[in-house]
Image (cartoon, rainbow, N blue to C red; front, side, top):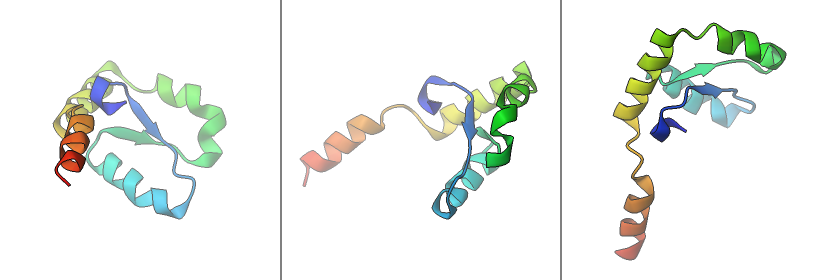
Length: 79
């Protein structure tokens, strides 16, 4: 999702997801909503301004380049 520049909404459900979500929020590549906000997701999405979505997209490009699949193949080929 980040590799193609789509706004990312994260919903941590279990404890082992909270750290990953926190990292994505700190890098400003995602917006977090809580489980109790799922019914309000349309309202939350509508609060995302164009400026915020552009900022998220630029931050995503810095973090994720879209070539991880090639790196995985290269890594496992060398084993």
